Length: 174
Image (spheres, rainbow, N blue to C red):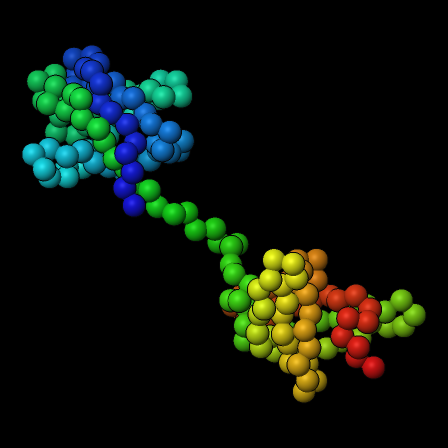
């Protein structure tokens, strides 16, 4: 997705440098491998920064490849530039429904005896703001368990396994 990211305001120096005004959408961590896109005669033209230096929160200086003289850089004055923003994927982010089909292993803690171990398969997910639930097949029966972060001890995405630690009485494993 391209978004308006700033404007090329005026010349800076004698080597084709320009002053930029940066819009709030301009990324804090700008990688000079990412081109700035301008429209020239109705065509999108990528500008690759040879040099980029921030000047305060909303300003910067830059020089662009192929615009290495004052005359060439002057052709860019007044143009608004856009930047391609990529949605950053958080490697740790997932949806709870992505866990359907995972093997479930876990323990139900007991105050008066040893923890009870169980195995099964996550068969469904019921999304509710008040109480999201996992449906698990454990010991041949369907069991609903709150899909709460404090019950999930570990998720192994490669092995498609989830380990749960549940409080006493939640599964009624007698």
